[in-house]
Image 1 (tube, rainbow, N blue to C red):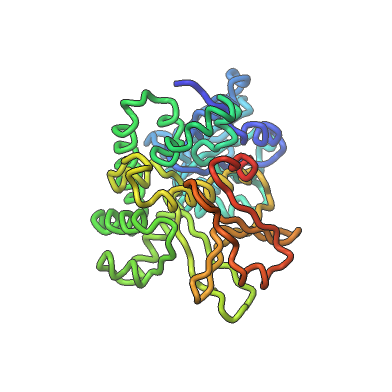
Image 2: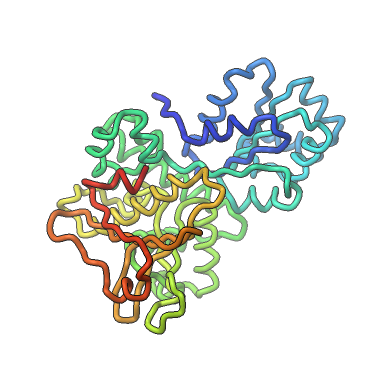
Amino acid sequence: MAYIPRQLEVVIRSRLFSGKAIVLYGPRQSGKTTMLRRLTEGYASDLIWLNGDSPDVRALLEEITVAKWKTILGGKKLVVIDEAQRVANIGLSIKLLADECPDVQVMATGSSAFDLAQRTSEPLTGRKFEYLLPPLSFAELCAHHGLLEEKRALEHRLLYGAYPEIVTCEANDVKERLAALADSYLYKDVLMMEGLKKPSLLEKLTRALALQLGAEVSASELSRLVGADNKTVEKYLDVLEKCYVIFRLPAFSRNERTEIRKGRKIYFYDLGIRNAVLGNFLPLEARTDVGGLWENYLVLERIKRDGPNPFPPRRYFWRTTAQREVDYVEETENGLAAWEFKWGAGSLPRFPLAFRRAYADASTGIVTPENCEAFLQ
């Protein structure tokens, strides 16, 4: 499989041997292990690779001491702990190594922010750099095979997503691979999370979210759809978010009387996974959800674009009680910026007058397939 370079490579390479652990989050199969193998190619004689999926590695690291660490290292200066969330007390293990062997670089990966962050947060306070590696971005794919080819592939991205395995596989394998990935990732990995004991509920909830792509959702409405109480639905939503299946976009408000303040939209970290959940890979011209797919794609790609930024913008959608809406709003120290998204041909949307009156200083724009590169790069 051809390797597509990742933007984070440059960032992480600049952090090597800076005295802090490097923790890399992201969904399974997003390319974390492949990228770290690429990054460590020049350290073959100085590298030890530990896989948290291996029982013997977990047993070795769960009750670690400085003396045991030094025995494991054998003088090597670079340690990678893959799938580190599988190791009990991994945060304390890494802290011990960082404190007692400051010349050793530790790198850890995890496919669950819930598990790995929980296991490393307190022990590694001030001792780590954290990064998220999502599936491939528009900018990475443009750098690999050119802007024109990537823009021609937009429909493919809206249908099949951007997991490295999917982007590089043969066309006739895409659906089968996505189905296997969705089944393994959603209904095996996610269910391993503590307290999730209802696979049928997880499946119903994920399908309900997929069907409401780009729409405002509430826990009470989802509870009614899947037949579970609000507390259970919130718990499952939290786990889906921390396992990088979905992410949430809150409503923007500065206390204008007519603005919705508590709403939220839910999007998927990969549209191929979303469409596999529904078993729907119909071409765009035969679909009724193209607007939601395009909206999800653009918001997600904007997040990917800002990934290495330590101070990313605050992101929202905007809506009033009269159903005036702006698809996407960003707030930074430089002010507000807002965009409407339009996939198909025809007249371009106008910004709601209510928004322009309330936020006259905000910059605005409309993103279409023709001009999307300015928004995404």
